[in-house]
Amino acid sequence: MSHGGDTIFGKIIRREIPATIVYETESVLAFRDIAPQAPTHIVVIPKEPIVSLAHSTPEHRGVLGDLMLAVAEIARQEGLEDGGYRVVTNIGRHGGQTVFHLHLHLLGGRDLSWPPG
Image (cartoon, rainbow, N blue to C red; front, side):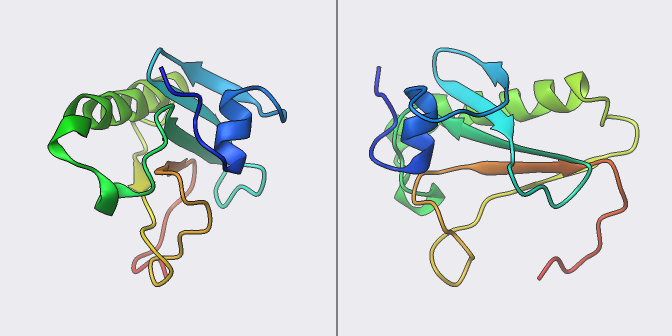
């Protein structure tokens, strides 16, 4: 099992820096965003250091499925099912990616506008 690589998320996985962890399995870790953009804003990451969705391969199929199932479970735990929620991943500079470790943002708890940016 990987320990997340050399990013802030790798440091959270290794417990080198604190985070408010809300969900964890062997392959996935989720924590509250430190600069929330909605009443509920949770970051869901694979423990394996995949740079972005664009860097995923067929070998990542299992962990990608784990990420999506984790988001659905966390949304249920957070009470977001009835009102709905958004799941976002930023890819590369133009996509707004700032941490180069694949991560999904789970946003909910208010009306979310479209387009987002």
